[in-house]
Length: 341
Ligand code: ATP
Image (cartoon, rainbow, N blue to C red; front, side, top):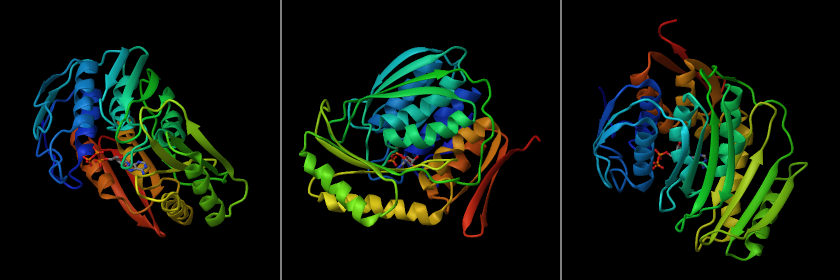
């Protein structure tokens, strides 16, 4: 049994999610203590708990400690079962993070699987639906995965109620990615969405983007979402390039002017453009599990976050893989190679 310490490094929910993903794919059981010890509300919260229960259902695992607020969990996986699944987080907890936890196992199943997850689709501290669609999944597809995904309904904090559906076709082995260049830039896109709020919020956000990022070829759209359970606003900037697409999403918050929300997104987009690396901070930590399952790979990125470094430490416990993180000409190269080769 692999013993993990949930307080190590970043000390957040990702340690649990990565352990679940790898345990399901490798068949190796794990025990984790001090779950989310570095968070204000330690222990398993709704989103994490749904990820645990969903993982258990998909692979028929034996689980102890899967209760709200629990700081210790043990997980003994069985065989991954393809089929149709439906999981409801019940709050605005991130549906994309639950999807990322389950996807590797669904790809390793013996037949196609379809999964519907209800919860938040646009959360401040998680990948937005567009981030998964335009940035994360294209990398996974380059590694050989066949995944289709649809946003059926938007879900914003605090009401949630969003729906994401994904269909995975078995992929016996992911191939190691090599992401060292961003490639030729394409036309940038700005999508400002509002739900149950005036459309001028979205239009003001786009005005700021137009003024602050005078890049050629912008495709901009302000949209009123008709069927969201609660109010919400998100501004998403998409910067495509031939090798990889960067996505910045910033959620509006009550009491924060649209202009401020937009400036937050603008600053992140500028930082990304200046860094000129293919893999941004968030994608970097999210690629660690797929690379581990592929048995290797490499990418060029910004200074690795605590999430990335912690994730590396977790995955190295499950498989004989060694990651190296090296600074090179103002960027960082993260590479993984199998220790048996
Ligand atoms: P907690 O940290 O409270 O335990 P959590 O379960 O949401 O909560 P974290 O460990 O913080 O988990 O992981 C958050 C994940 O969301 C990371 O993979 C991170 O890269 C990703 N993420 C956060 N913000 C963004 C963003 N703006 N765009 C894309 N991904 C993001």
